[in-house]
Amino acid sequence: MTPLLAFIQPFLQHAFLQQALLAGVLAAIPCGVVGSYVVIRRISYIAGGIAHSVLAGLGIVHYLQVVHGVEGLSPIGGAITAALLAAVVIGWVSLRLKQREDTVIGAVWAMGMATGIVFISLTPGYTTDLMSYLFGNILMITAADINLLIGLDIVVLIVVGLFHRQLLAVCFDAEFAGLRGVRVQLYYFLLLLLTALTVVVLVSVVGIILVIALLTLPAAMANLFARRLWQMMLLATIACAILTAGGLALSYSPDLPAGAVTILLTGAAYFLTALFRRR
Amino acid sequence: MSSAPAILCRGLDFGYDGKSVLRKVDLSIPQGDFVTVLGPNGSGKTTLLKLALGLLKPNAGRMEILGQTPDQARRRIGYVPQHPQLDPLFPVDALDVVLMGRFGKSPRWGGWRKADRDRARQALDEVGLADRAASHFSALSGGQQQRVLIARALAGDPEMLLLDEPTANLDAQVEEDFYALLKELNERLTILLVSHDLGFVSGYVKSVVCIGHDVAIHPTTEITGEIIADLYGADMRLVRHDHRCSEEGHETS
Image (cartoon, rainbow over all chains, first blue to last red; front, side, top):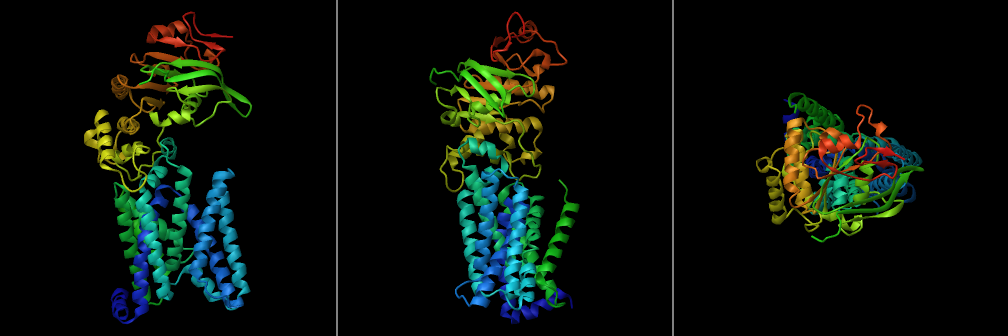
C-alpha cells in the first residue's frame, strides 16, 4: 500500500488528522495571496527574518507559562506579537534610519533566534519544544489554533481586498505610484505586516526554518503560469493546499516529520515546474 | 488651460554633498510647447525633471509648474520614467499597468471602477495598443512597453507629459513612430522630454534646452550652436549661466 492510501483510513478515523489537513488548507490562503506579493516584491529575505524572530515570541510565552505559571497567553499570540514587531523594526529602520536593509534584517533575524533560545533554555524540558518550533508540527494543532487561523485568513483577505491596487502598484513601480499620490511607505508597511501574519500561520504548519520555502515556492510556481496577479494568487493557493496535504499524507505512515516532507515535496514540485515550464 | 507657463524657473539652484548641479537656472516654457532637454550624462537633466516633479527640492530659487508648486501640480503631470524595473515575470497585463495611472482619480478602496477601466482602454487606444490590453506586459516589445507607459501617464488626464530618456532603448523606426505619437499628443498637451543623445532630437521638437558645463563634455562631436540650430532649426534657451547655446555658438564663461 502506498503511503497516500495508508493515510486515508486513519484520516477518516482520527480527528487530529482532519484538523491538521484543515490547518493546511487554511494556511494555503495567505500562503498563496501574500506569498505572491513576497515573490513579486522580492522580499523573501525579510520574510525569513520575520520568521526567525518568531522564536522570540514563542520562547518568551512558553517561559512565562511554564516557569511563572502565567495564564491567558498562547504561543501563537506570542508568535504574532514577535512577527509584527520584527516587521515594524525592519520597515522602520530601513525607511527612516537609511540603514542597509539586509543588515537590519540579519540583525533582527539573529537577535530573534537568540532571544528565543535564551528563554527556551531557561524553561525546563525545552528540547522537544524547540524542535517543534523550528520544524513545525502540524499534528499538534488544536481547535483554538484553527479558530486563530480562520481569523488571520479573514484579516488577510479583507486587507488585500481593500488595498490590492495600491499593493500591486507599490510592487510594480513605487516611484510612479508615489507621484500619483499613493502613500508608498504606508502600503509597504502594510505589506510587511501581512507578511508577518502569514509567516505566523505557516510557522504552525512547517516551523520557523522551513517557512520561507512554503511562502515563496508555490507563488513562484504559479508565477510561471499566471498572466495577472489574481491568477497567480489563486494558483499559488491551490498549489500550497495540495502540497501541505500531500506532505501530511506522505509523511504519516512512514512516521516522518510532516513539515520536512511538505518542504521536500514543495521544492521538488518547484524545480520540476521551473525545468519544464520556461518563459 | 490657464496662461501660466508650463514650467517656470527663477534663480533655481540645486546641489548635494556640496556639489552644485544646477546653478541660477532661469527658464520659462509656455504651455503647448514640445521641449527637449539636452545634455550629457550627469549634467543635471534628470535632476531638473525630479525638481519639476517635486521629488527633489531646490536649494534656492523657485520652480513653478502650471502656476503651482511642483507638489501641488504633481497630479496634473503625466510622468513617463526612464527604465521601468522590468521583472520579466511580473504578473501584470498592459491594462493593469495603464490603470495605475488612475490613482488619485479613483476611490481609495476596493477595485478599479468602470470609469477607470474605460479611461485606461481609451488611453491604450490613443497610443495604438487597444488590441494588446490583455497582453502580458513583458510579452510586449520595447516600443510597445514605452507606449503602455505613456498610456499610463495619459490615464490620469494630465496637462503636461514629462518623459525621461524615452527613446533610450528604441531602434530608429520605432523611435520615428514614437515621435509621431508625441507630436499628436502635443496638440493638446505640453511635452517635455529629456535626452542625452543629440541624434534623438527630432524635427517635431519645438524648442531645445541645453544643460551642460561645457561643450567639451561631448567627446565625439564638436558641436557649436550653429550646428545645433542648423540640425534642428530649433530655438535655444539659456540654462546654465556658464553655458550658452546661441547663434554665435556654445560659449563658456
